[in-house]
Image (cartoon, rainbow, N blue to C red):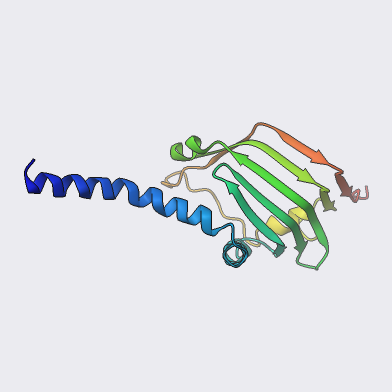
Length: 168
């Protein structure tokens, strides 16, 4: 076999194994508490700008490729009232769907779920955290396609829902 062909073959093998090795390294590294803390802080920082409240997560784990686990998830509205709380959240994903631009959640397990919808308005409660201060009209010429999210199975353990009725 010519030398240039061996070099080309080793380059191709390197191009294939490098991404796999990086993924394996990330999965291994995320098992250590300092790396999980860094990932949690970076994720919360990225999400915080799109919320009108404060999101906290005690711990995040990635025990296998298709499962993400969160502990101590709490969301407070702009007034500091707790509007969402979970002691544990486990999400199983169907990974091949991600390559098609879809998020396919095969199972969600939520322990000790608390949801406070308050007055179903945009000042208090869970909906107020996601409310926009200025409505943006949708652009029909936009190149951004919506992401399809499907949840196949939802399992709740000890859930509580609070709603304050709107007076007539």
